[in-house]
Length: 232
Ligand SMILES: [Zn+2]
Image (spheres, helix red, strand yellow):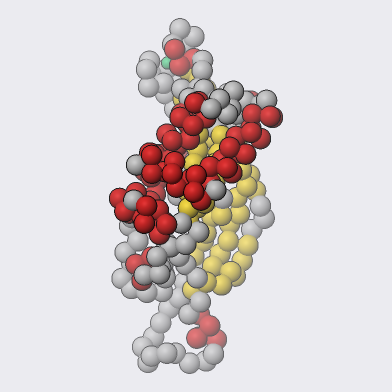
């Protein structure tokens, strides 16, 4: 799958953008806990190239991002794109689909029963924004060091925590993490913390417009509830 990813990135122009993003990091001469890359993908194009990879991206996007992470790490190391980068754990990949297959199973509608959104994958959702918060900061990535000086994890970039889609922020930064080698407490090296923007938006299903028209599509009662979205 790694080769297919490279072929796809090359054909879609993603590779060029990736190299450009690397150059920006490299030119900044600054070291970060995490280097974040946003990669636009069209799952249908990928499926045409390799059905297994296309399917994997659609149904296991978090695991698919890990393969992209490994490809990007090898590319950075082979071409010496970012001098400061030390470990693969420091690369964070965000896959952004440009399209999803126009099939009902890819549409998320919280007004439709039964709910079956247990898998962490991509959905399309249409609605009306009814409230918006201000843009605030959140931690995208942080570097932790072992407090035991003789432990190999007391230096380097081995303990990197990256924010995953759907996770709360305490999953990234907290003060009770312990070293996986020696079980001593881990301490964050604040100099390397990477912050990103987030915004909370409240949305309601587009079907609410039917209620405002003063009639219901069918005779049964209906209830539409607003839902909260985290934009990161
Ligand atoms: Zn340790």
